[in-house]
Image 1 (cartoon, rainbow, N blue to C red):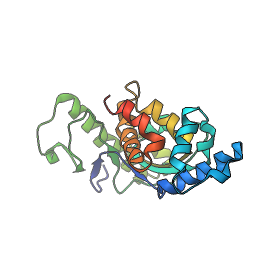
Image 2 (tube, helix red, strand yellow):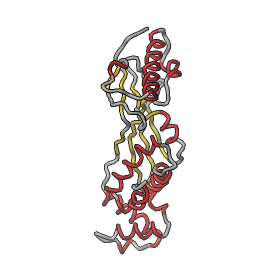
Image 3 (spheres, rainbow, N blue to C red):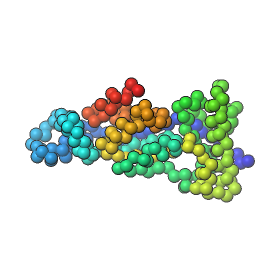
Image 4 (cartoon, helix red, strand yellow):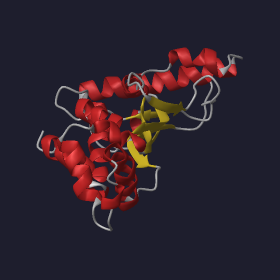
Amino acid sequence: MVKGEKMNLIKPSYEILTEIDGERILKNIERAGRTCYKSEDKISQDSAIKFVKMISKRGHHSVIEHESISINFICDRGVTHEMVRHRLCAYSQESTRYCNYKGGVTFIIPPWINIKPGEYTGEKDLKSEIGIDDGIWFKSMLSAEQDYKDLIAHGWNPQQARSVLPNSLKTEIVWTANIREWRHIFNLRCSKAAHPQIREVMFPALKELNEKIPVLFEDLYEEYREE
């Protein structure tokens, strides 16, 4: 059995890569939208918010497609299987074909698992008692990591050895979509019907975008924040 660096367990996270200038975004949307009415002469220093609210209320959501946002998510592979189901988006994802994890594999801790983030080589590294179910998951991750490293040591390349890695494998994905599509995404992925692990990253992202551009996201945030 090949020994190496410790298995790493982490919580999921996200980072909004687009520099969000709410005022600029709303002004660009207004400028595009007023083309429909040839009302560019009504553009003023503070007219964008009122205009975007008006078109949103009327259901003219195609106008907000003129602005897009990129978000980098760090989550497990199972979550990204759901993310990439969305259309009209661009994705760039960490590749298990080319990334070699022989130095140590990183896994995402599901929200229902009561294990703290950190580096582990075995159950002796756990700082507190864990339940039977949590222990089964933990030992499965240890085994998957060791099997992967053993196969790499025996000459398998990453695209072959990845077959023993579980959905809990950490991955990183940059996801770009226009604002109308993001609204659709949040509407599906922040609801109670969504998988707990995708809600774990999607609602905080919605919350931050609402803080930056409330005109475009406040209704969704208000709908889902109590769920």
